[in-house]
Every structure is written in C-alpha cells, then in structure tokens.
Length: 477
Image (cartoon, rainbow, N blue to C red; front, side):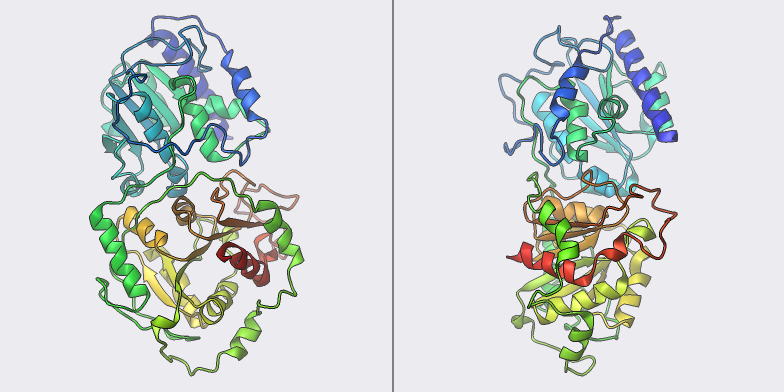
C-alpha cells in the first residue's frame, strides 16, 4: 500500500514540476491512449526493444540535445507537453536491487542516444554501483541521496523513495522536467508487462519518434574480465589467479576450499523466452525421460569413494548453481540442488560451481554436508559485480532461484534454468531464447512472499528434480 501511495504522489509531483519548471504549459494526458494501445500483448514481446548496437557517446545528426517527441504538440503523459529545451544534465534514479538494475541498464544507452551531449548521472544503492561502473553511457554514479545537491534539467525516476520525491520538490534540486514510474504503472493496471518494457515506457516520452531502444548490456573492464578468467580456470581445475585450486570432488560431503577472489562481467539479451509454455507444462509432465535420474539413483550410481579426484579434462565446462534468494519462499529445496549437482557432474560432464555471498555461505556449507558435488565459490567483500557477471558469462549453464544473479545470467545469454516460487508471473522472467522458466502458479499467487498460506504444499516445492533436469536438457540442446 505504501508503494501505491508513493506512485500516486510521484504522478502529482511530475505534473507539478513539469507545469512549473517549463513555463506553465497546459496539462493534458493524451499520451495515455498511446501507451494503452501498446500494452496489448506486451508481456514477453519486447515492445520497442531493438538489437541496434549502441555506441554510447556517438553523435547522430538527428540527435540534438533537446527534449523530443514527434512534435512540441505531442503530450508526454506526465502532465505537460514536451518542450524544445536544451538538456545538459539528466539524473536517473534507480534505488533498487541487483536484478532490478539489470532490467534497467538499457535506459542509460537509450538516453545517451537521444542526448549525446548531456551529462548522465545515476543515483543507486551502493552495492549496485559496480554493476554499471563501466557503462560508457553513464558519466557519474552517486550512491547517497544526500549527494543530490543541485538541479538537473531532467529527472527520470525509475524507482525512488519518499526522500527522492522530496528532492524533486525542493527549490534547489527541483528539475526542469520529470518522468516517473508511477504514471506508467497506473496506465498498466491489470496488465503489467515485463520490467524491461516498463522501464522503456517510463523514458519513451523523452525519446524521438521511432528512436530505437538500446540493447541491455553490461561493460566489464579488461581487468574484471581477466579476473573472471582466473576464476574460470580455477573452476575447471587448471592454473589461474584464484588462491585455492581445489580439485573437483565427486559425491563428497567434505567442504571445498573457498575461492577468495571475486568479480563479474556483464552481457546482453533482449530475446523473448520462446520456451515458457513448454516448460511450465513440463512441471507436471516429466517423469519417464530416459536420461534423467532421481537423487536416489544418482547416489547409487556413484561408486567413487568420498573425496576421489577426477581429471578436469573429462568435463565440458562448469555450471553455476545459485541457491540463494532474498526470501525463504523463493528457495528451491537444497537437497534437490544437491541431487542436481551430482547429475550435472556425472551425466552432463559439467563441474557444479556453487556461488553465493558471505551471507549465503552457510547455505553452501549445508549443501556440501548433504553430499553436494563440485566447488564452493564465495564472493569476497567489496568484489565487483561486473567480474561476477563475466564469471557467469563464461559458464556453460546457470541454474538458480529468482534473484539478481539470475538476471545477470539472462543478459549473458547463457543456457539458463530459472526456478520461481511466489513471484509475479512474467514480470521478471528471463528473456533470452536460451532460458527456461519453471513456475508453479497457484491461486494464492502473488503473495507477500513471507507468509505462506499452504506451508505443506508450497509452490516452489512442487517443482521436482525431474522437471529441472528436463529443462537443463532443453537449454543445452
């Protein structure tokens, strides 16, 4: 409810700011019909998204640094007509989590294409900043709302707080023009599309008619790519920069050494998930697939003694397993991840790499105590998200719950199996054609993701090991 109040207040503030800051132009709302017209069939359709390559600071003759639409007379849906006004500075407010930022990175490139000479600043949470640190479309990143000390020509509020709302009203920091999430969410009531599309619609009033939307991309540095390469070599058992090179262990309950260095590299993707219908149906249809083994069969099929080492040359690569999620109800049972890790190692010849933060390390320890196969990798404090992204991008497979790292894997366009619990359908699904979504949507969905009304029959528990194995087979081809 508090979020809805914030959205409503954002709509009012944008209309007030735009009417005042731009000379009291008349208010109108004709843009609503245009947005509603494009909502139909928008889920998973990638409306307006384009695979056009982006050179963030390239100048095109058609891109002058002025607020644009098809003409001055076209309303922008935020409360005033778009003016022809020189734009020298833009602030994008994205006070959100890792996965949410991953769904918004195309906004920066799109604004840069429209306003090549404007200074673009992003306000985000401190732990998310490293994800966009290398983006050539971004000139500055601030991670403290109090650092918003002066007026920007344009403010784009993709996700803000009450504090950022007041900043837009303060005389010293009031922008000349403002667009916000609240207006778009109001227009999308009852028909919420993918988050990538919502973010596009927020900035659409600022873009020229027919201007393409930049592709979602992440930009790791050469140093971050090199660091990720070291982790990849460690994962495969060859020499690399990681301090601990633990040989792959088959079917062991013994904990592996921790990899003490972490960073990641980003990738891009805006393809529609073409396999959604088949996979959701697969949850209840699998069971007799010949090359899928249950956890019990796997345990009996491993005849190596505990701690036996194997030659990494036997393997096709490594698979990332991420068991974490912000809410307990989003986490697929750990014992099923353990059984999956053995199957991946034994049948798919992929070395399972269990990744997590320091807060998730206990979860990983429990998995290895249950007999998990593979290696444990824990992100050190202060590590770069772009290095982590690059590490994910070099893997052959990613399997995980709804979380930030899953969104990074989606941008990387690697084979991906996404396991969803009580989350809203469609909105945060991976969009890559190489992904599969497993989501048992019950009549109690969506919920608050804290209090389960069916504790003995949780939606995420209905997704069996066989369903995940089948989805892995599909994405690996």
